Image (cartoon, rainbow, N blue to C red):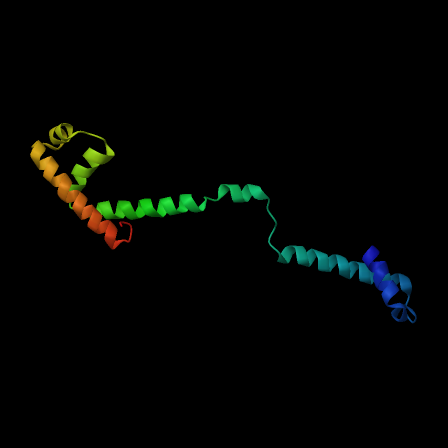
Length: 130
């Protein structure tokens, strides 16, 4: 309403030869339509709740790193992957891993050594190892 009267105040010459009431209603209607269109053209504003759902930079970096590490482990030979999964990820000793995999403890040790070397090389290729 105030904007309508302000426009009438700023344009007194337009009101001189027209009916004032009709002009005021037209201006008011156009202002409402413009305001409605302006709201529809902008995205709806959200509060901080939407930002709380998004992961932080550290979480995104960790997720990308874990995907790259999983990809590097998947690129290893199956026997090397099995040994690493048993000894490092499942926390089993050499003796327990040898019993589960059905291979001698010395083989578990040597496969672990070569698996770690292959994993380091795979991580270096992906830019993750120093």
